[in-house]
Every structure is written in C-alpha cells, then in structure tokens.
Image 1 (spheres, one colour):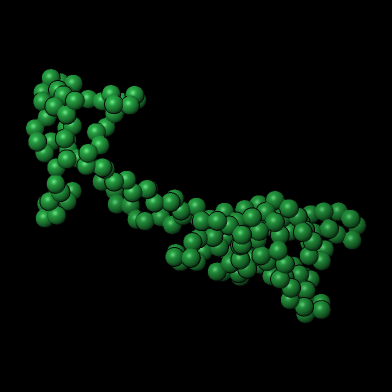
Image 2 (image 1 turned 90 degrees about the vertical axis):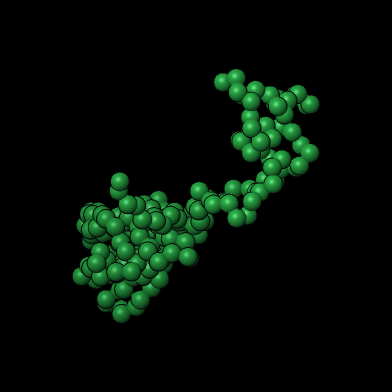
Length: 171
C-alpha cells in the first residue's frame, strides 16, 4: 500500500505578472500579460500559456509556461525562451537577453478551485423516505431484497429513528 501525501490544488489564473529590466536605461518595469495573449516588452514578445498559483492557505508556488520571442532589426522573429518560469526562483528560468531580462513575478485573477464542502442535511424525525410519488415509500418494517427483516439499529428502514450514541466508536 503506497502512502500518499496531501496535494495542493493549483489555481489557474487569467493573468501573469512579469518584471522586466531594460539594461540600457536601467529601468525596471512590471507588466501584465493575459494568458494566451502576447504583450510587447521592448523588442520582446511575451506570451504566457498558463499561470498557476496555490490558495492562500498553501505554501506559495507560482508558475507559468511562457513563450518569449524577439523581433530582430531585420524584422525576423526568433524564439528566445519556451518553458516554465517560477516566481519563487526568478534566476532559475528567467530570460537573460543582452538588452532585456524578464522574469515571472506573480499570477492574478484566479478563483480557488477548491471544492465547496457538501451541504449538511438533517433528517426530520417524522419523515419517512419515499420513492418518487408522494406518500408512496417502503413500509417501516418492509423486508430487505434478500427477504430478511431489518433489526432495530440496522441500516434498515428505521435507521434514522434511532438515537445517536455520542460515545459510540467512529469508523
């Protein structure tokens, strides 16, 4: 039997946030790029394909799959970078160009993909379960499909009428 740890849900975000450095002017800029759209930073075209983060209750981990192209002086486009960027480690997969540096700073705009907790349903003591039509349901002492009658306390027709024992062991 293999042990499995808890796995944090990733959140898909619609916008990636980058930081860029223009080495000629020394100017540092922060810019946003919608996922699937291309934005220009100097001679570079930056296109995030996905941008993932985690919920606020988890350790931060922001990643983005990014394509970065450069338009040369001869108007040719060449791919400079195609891969994952990690906001926690900007030096790991940031783009280092002779004139520009670009790295992932954050993702934003995503909604948590954590599922909502199931609703709490309480049984009414006088209500009996029905099958489709109002007032038509199994009789409280109806036989099970195998022909046996439910015993008090069994998971039979009168299960919900039994008081709960708070000291009973839980499975």
